[in-house]
Length: 521
Image (tube, rainbow, N blue to C red; front, side):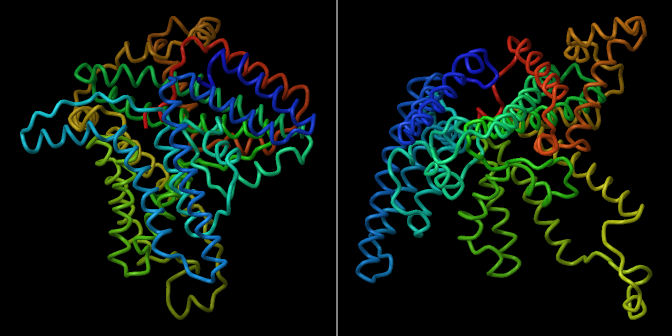
């Protein structure tokens, strides 16, 4: 089931809200948790019943591992013993089970194809269907089991664990939540009365996220689909635009989903962690990964980077650990060499940036560095025209590098990505494609063009494309993000009218929307 669908907006979520708060009003907190879990299973099973069976089995097996670890921990603690080999074995088996399931459904065909390519064999690919969200709920359960092993999670009842894994707002495309963020909230379900201002804020955030997806991401997506499907017909400027279009499509698609997830959670009285913090405002690649897909970065840091030694074993080992993390990040996003290349493009620049940062320190004193400068009054870093110019230049350079790397993320293979980039850098200078511009001729916007009598201009067919591009760049790189707008929102008649109009506009556009991009990962 999609957030951006008539079924979700007019049937599923109203039933969810009414049933949930109805049970809470009757003082039935446990029933409310079970009800949310049942609704989450309906939400997930709507896509495909076989997906639901896979997830339920995964929940059951992982809960068994959790109970084994919890009981073993309690017994050893009572006996005054340290965690023994038996608990470690259980933890390893749990991790192996989860990674094995993920490998089979996501990477088995990729593995067979790679073996065929390297050794000339002819293994038949299985054509295995990838269950939606399996990467997200598998990583979430790995973290839960590992944290149980380390004593960070005590014995958890089945109803809370099932809700932790299946909670529908963040089930399909994240964020990857942590037990410490969610379980305490699930335990307190029923203790608080509905907060109507919080519910209104959650609804407003949901609408803003929906607008990102329906009005911006899918509009850019039409241009992206045309561009990648007709690379040979593109000129240099067309190819450059397609690169930018995908960078904005992916951002508004994924960020919009996460905004909707947080908004839905707030309407249910549950706070879901932030996953995006204006990533296209980053001034370098290190800053970018503090802002983009925050919870995935957190997972890799805690469960991969730190166990590998982090920065404790020397600078060279630290850089190697970073590269391992980005290799795995690329592989996590998709079974293909182009995903691995995308990850390594980020990893190499990340290591280079860290290397540079360790050797260059910002000058916080005016004038020349040296003994004389120490006697002067220090200036606050980040002020002055020169700094502002360098910040803008760094932001634009980071955005362009990330956008180029996204080409490998979007392409079907490395060859297609190379072809588009070659066209963008070395292609023919020709008139912009009318077919590409036609992807942006949204009816409601084109009507405005006609009312303003701009449709007779020679460039009229390109106006909407560049206006929407400019709006997308502004919202992504300069304007306040959705969370910031909600924080400062005052709920008056005018605000309610704007949110209502935006919601109606989105609903009227449902017939032309697509699934979320991260459903594929």
